[in-house]
Image (cartoon, rainbow, N blue to C red):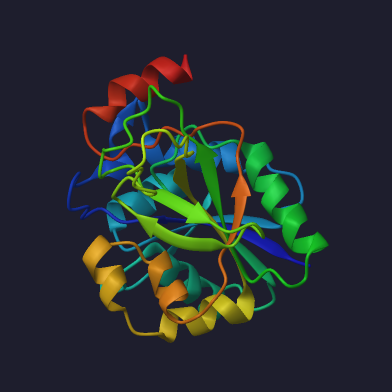
Length: 242
């Protein structure tokens, strides 16, 4: 099984334009991500997929692999599929690590690779973290996920799901962490599937899979990953990097 980690990175972010190149402790955000992922065991290739020449040049100058993708692609998964189809034709599994995850845990990526080796039925996998009472469950920038007893996703939302109507019931809330794994055939077919109503409503592409009756396997991470969504996140990330 040949595995590639692909890091989608676009310049024109709605909430934070130019985010991949913002400096964190004097180093572009995207370089923090790829530097960590490049150390993963069991991975045969690590590349960045971008639609911007500025990002392309920074990655290339740092000595890492990078591919240009069309600007028209709507999501990170679409960029993964494009690179898989055009450049990495002999790879079987693709791990999508978001370009705004400077605290990405390489052990987590390695566990995802192992899961695909161990369970041939898994086509699409992503990660969740059990939120604490101190976490901002109501923050729409923090995506939540609920899943069944077989660890398959039921729904993803920016809303705090489950909504706890009965205050005597203790319900756990899980944060969705934007790391994904796909088998080759799944990601190529998924990219050809039209965006769905729920996906557009929540701006969450994984809902496209659920609306099309595809299973999304959930893996639990013991650690949270603090991503960079808005400029205010930079200070918190820099503290954690220390």
